[in-house]
Image (cartoon, rainbow, N blue to C red; front, side):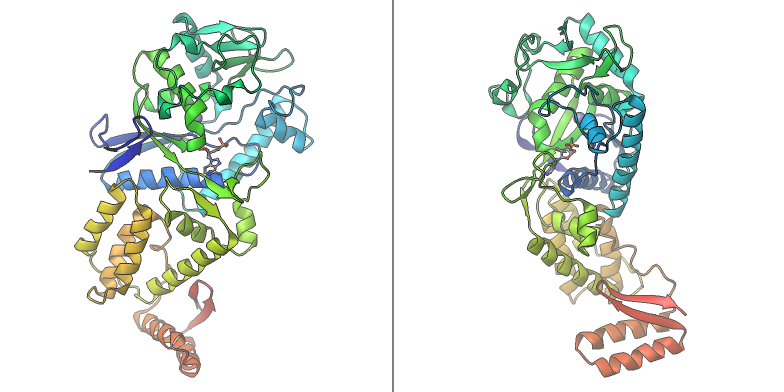
Length: 456
Ligand code: AMP
Ligand code: ZN
């Protein structure tokens, strides 16, 4: 039994799937107008841990993540209301055209996928692009229009939130309208109403209402429906998306189908920097590339995030990240000295691991359990190794891939012995062992992540 904190209702609840043994997850993905930042990666890591935890519990998971690669392409809009794709094109001195938008999006989509790989985040089952689902958006808007939820102004087709008595049910924000008063569009009937389709005389996609682009929220409703059906299990995203974007998704999807949308809403807390949310708009963001340039292993960043619960805010500092990298290196060294042999997973530790992960994805306790296991002298090294391989199916810290090189048993023993003497600072003995290893045809190099072994 896995328990998750559902923003819808605000309580920790037992997870019950719609279809036995299967889970459908929709995760809001990136807008591909720039490199994503490490705060965004916290959101994608949360959905990865969720997916892996569900798989660990025996569920078959279908995970869908959208790629937002379409903007409104209105070069005359003011900088506050400018959409991200237009911003990206201007930043790179590219023309404001659909072709240039596609090119920009392709480049940053590939960079995003590379970031996922580096952070050991499993690729979602489907990564649909908004640009390839324009018709699905139009069909959904048509449905909402038929049901009387829309109206048209001079600049677009809008969703009429006053027609939806349930509007704003996620996170209890219905009473909080402060956000929507900014940039209020005088033609809107209610300040919370939002665009489903935006007109653009110069360029865009054809539609019944006129040439233009879909609004910012409709793509998630259209693509989740296409790949998961109208009613699915879990929707994820950063907590900043809950008040507007997710309430708008709910309003669109539930009113179009007359059914429920997602049963569980899982939101991660922010990664903060200098007291505020890390955000592109605030200009205080760091990319994974910057971490790598500072010699931070992406998996050390993953380790660091896992030492905090996904619902707790994390304050970025180089010191904290550096300490996490030191701990991560120590972890790898400890795993290396366990040896190559994989024994039998320890059932007591496996049970404890499952209990903490199933308690709302309590990764800090799971990480603590790794260290407890490593220190436990009553468990055999090969069984520790086997247990860690199981833990790593959920944590994804790369513990299962250490020592991919085929190393003969006698060489491995010498490497382990050398690690021990090196730790006790007996460098003379360590050099002797290095020579012995060399005579057997292997070279051992000491790196920050532990010994690296190469066949000579
Ligand atoms: P965006 O491309 O801005 O829609 O963001 C992609 C994902 O990253 C969304 O789920 C956001 O909620 C999430 N996100 C953005 N900034 C942060 C942050 N500083 N910390 C955690 N998650 C974030
Ligand atoms: Zn979304």
